[in-house]
Image (cartoon, rainbow, N blue to C red; front, side, top):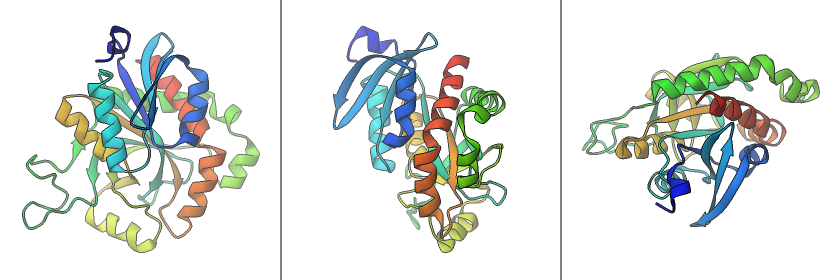
Length: 258
C-alpha cells in the first residue's frame, strides 16, 4: 500500500476515456495525484467518501491492469466501471442506461480445451456483479434521470443525438477487444451470448480481476450507439456531447448512497 491515507480508500472508479472522466474530476475534492505506468490516479473525496478515480484506457488489458493497481496498490475495497457502451438488445436505445448483473468476455474461446467463453481453469464464464452495489447504482441512475437529466442535458443535445428521457435496464454485459460496429458483429454476439444487454471493452476483464482478488464490482454504462453500421458516428457524437454529463451525474449520486 502507498500510505495510510490511501489505504482508507473504499472504492475505485475506473473510466476508460478522458471525455468520460473530465467533468467528474471537477466535482470531487482531489487530495493528491499519483502517476503509475502512464496512468494518473486521483485520490479524492466526495460527499464525505474516499475514492480513487482513474482513466484506464481502452480494452481488456488496459482495464485489468488498472483494476489490479487499484486493488493492490491503492487498497480499494470495491470497483465501479463506468462510461459509455453499445446496445445489443433490441429494446435498448441510444441515451438509455445499462447496469450489469453479470459480465462475460465474448471473445474468450479456448475450445476444445474449455467451453466457449469459459476463463481457463476457473470453471467460470459469467462473473456476477455485487448485488448491493448494483442496487445502489440503479437507485443513483433513477435519481439522476428524475432530478437532474432535464437540467443537465439540453433539448438541443437530445434532438441532435436523437435521445429521449433515459430508461434504465439491468442485464448481461459482454466485453471484448473489438469495437462492435457492424451488423455481423452485432448478430454474432446476440446469437453466441444469450441475453446480452450491452457491450463494451473493459467490464468483464475488471470483473475477473475483482473475482480473483475477492473484491466486489459493479458497472453502469450509458448507451452511445446501437452497435451497428452507424456506431462509429453515434459513438463519437455521444462521447463529446453527453458522456461526461451522464457519468458525472450518476457517479456522484452513487457515491452519496454508499
